[in-house]
Length: 335
Image (cartoon, rainbow, N blue to C red; front, side, top):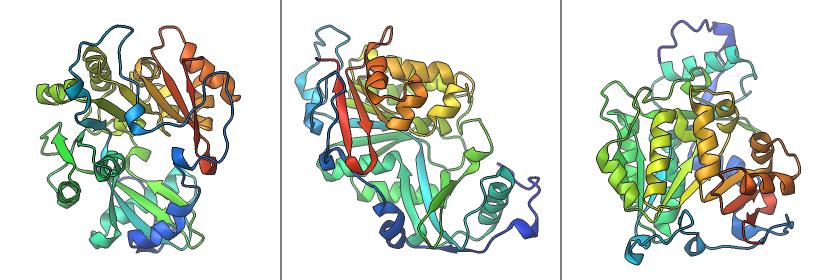
């Protein structure tokens, strides 16, 4: 995306320093991070609330016997999300909330020489995939990587971690996704990327994924989808993927994330339709309490979970609500 005409002035540009990932982890990474295993309290939602392990994930049955060989169910987990490189940047003051300040910051960052790779981290689907691989799970990431230094960094890092990367496009003009992670001295942070200023996904117009990628999903033990996939893929392609997974009885896990808000407003086009499909045709939904309220209209977590489990046509079996430092709780269709 060409930002030359965004109107940044010299007065809007702020000094930046690139920082290593270890310094970032000491601040941002340690703020309120928690997993399901760290839950210190539980709230009963009118459904069964339980602790789970990865091996307990529900198989996607569509209400029928799958007839799928058990050995396949022990196979690869596929992560569908944007393959994004995060670049950590220290700033004396974070840019303001307005679009002009963020444009100015992004213009400055993109116009600067690439920082040393000590300030780079793999982001997007790779976080889940690397964690899974380190637990001994065979994991494949589906996504796009450009023919650039950021794409090379992602390929090398994922290969070193034992994660397979299956690329969805060879478009020579499509760059690797980059997100600038801005951190101030108080360890407050903000994110800045091209998607703050465009509603078009990176692979806009690609209505279907390649047959080889569909075959990978058909053979998978599970498909994990994150809302940030809409930064990369057209909603039409995402919907095709969900239908393919359901047809193959591949369990679908959907983490809504911050992209739920623009999707509800149909940004990008057909985003609302794709979000509705994922909210009703996933086996497991993962949301924060705020995201659950946003997509259901219910601020009460009990009502939000009930709404997702009992919506017309819903195939959802588990709703995982993340509650910050308290971990998460799980509401199930089983009473």
